[in-house]
Length: 112
Length: 114
Image (cartoon, rainbow over all chains, first blue to last red):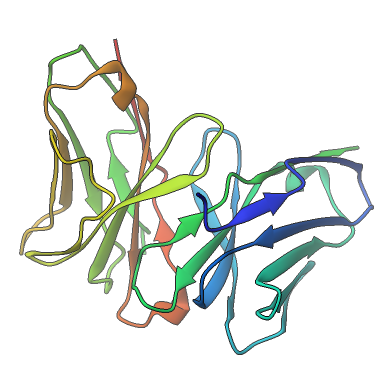
């Protein structure tokens, strides 16, 4: 089974609205990362949050991490059409290195 | 800094041929990882390499797939006798020694087996 699982699978919003997506995982982690992938392109690293951190901000992005619930959320504020992409969470397990476990992603469509 | 360079971007092979995918990590990065992405799915870990060493190949299929990261030159993911099920996007990532800097991904190689 997948380590990181995103919810919802797809999200459609209008420009200016906020987009929230969640990620749940199963095992102990060293850190959790969020990536963006535009259609047919590579992955862009958005933000990394360590297991001892609870919240992190980067521009219009806000990530939270609740290790007791084994869950994370990614909030994109004031969305733009350019935010249209798939968003993946990936967990970096505490007992291994380099073996990121990706979920299936949340497909976000932002309409003007 | 050119980032992680993968080539070719697109590769078409007939069933039974060999596919060679190349990855040059970011300057200063000594760790290389290969992932495979099937359509509409997330990435699946395949192998983690350092120079001249395979650290973790637990995600590699047992047959036909091999990877190397020589002392000089790019990392190579090699798929022998390709089958249609090998059609996917293959991504390479690299990182420095400290895992807290995250991983930098290349743009991927899209392999199509016809």
